[in-house]
Image (cartoon, rainbow, N blue to C red; front, side):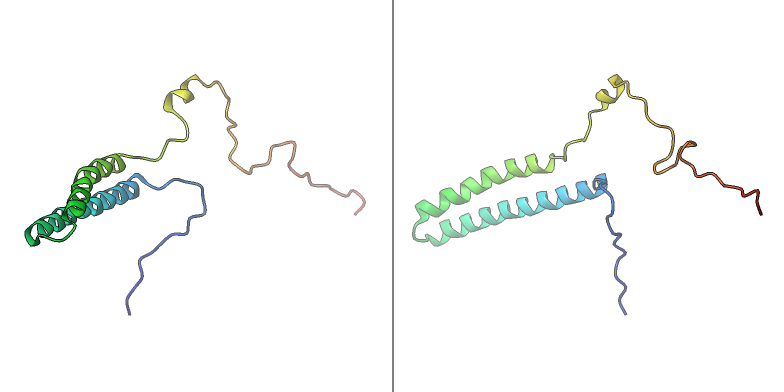
Length: 118
């Protein structure tokens, strides 16, 4: 029986890891460059076979060979925006609460009531 890869369930608002982002950008780049190679091969075949409407298909293939690498590089270098700029944290004078999340302060803690009548 084949085991399935462990896929954790996303329950937070955390962004994807840098490795995952890099892998998806690399896959997208390779796919787009594969389309560019396909445009080159199709253009060469159309010229060799002297296909009808060559005046239409050849500029489309040429446009694909010029625009696709440019778009591939732009998309490969694209990262999701950071939520806050690093320098903004240096100039912000907020005091963060030292208590862990969901903790109860001393005033809010329930007190034990001792019955003296027992």
